[in-house]
Length: 330
Image (cartoon, rainbow, N blue to C red; front, side, top):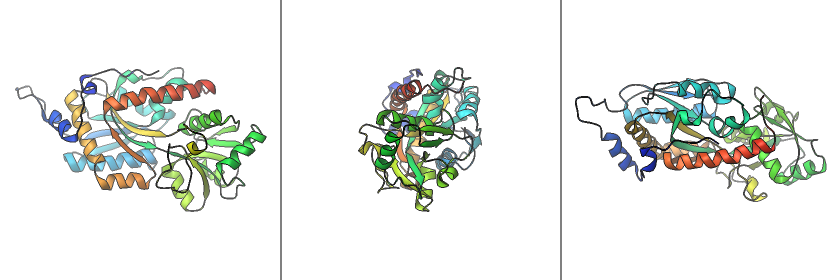
């Protein structure tokens, strides 16, 4: 399980944005003092292609960062290998706060258990903040005979492995989260991994169901292209208020992903505090929160101490799913 190194900043209770801002401003006054952070553009590495959910929200966050600090955020898309390429780039970057990683649960909660060898480890990073939670939506074709989650479960139970589910690839969140539900429900379905877009085949009925991130699923549901059977969050989401949470039928089930910001290990504590303070101010902006909710995302905004605890719990949960289902890319 990934182990997150403790630091002074993680032990402090940054109870309010004001306190965090004061910490960030408490810079040395000696001749060797460093310029206030940020003094120049910040590079935000997003291990996904342009236009997908992490990229879109990272750019929204970057706009807020620039508005508050006056410094630009340059989003660098480094897609590929289940976020590994982007994570490795940031792990090897200078620990000065000017190269950050915006990533999802695969990087630290799933990849270490799916891949035998990774070019990075959790200890190469310090968590700054968890921005949001990403519910997945279980979707099927509008022409499908499955009108409810109960319909799907009944059919899957009667015909083990006869039904199919698509995902964005072996070990991806869309794969592991659905496997988690199948385990809890005691069902078996055939996994069909894709390298590119899988939703078109769900729309066409070539595969029975799939989990898709709320950012992509909600527009498809509203356009009448797919039918939503359930969401992986603990409760229903505002973007699909009539779609039940899977937990309503399977108590305790949660299968969400998340977005979070990380810095290379060794990043100065004052820089970490400044990043947290700025991010929490962005999160407090009603317009920013409204945009997240419109995308079906759940704002979080927690600091490094709570984020670190969450990461440990998240890794344990997904590691069990990977082991139980023998998920590996090797």
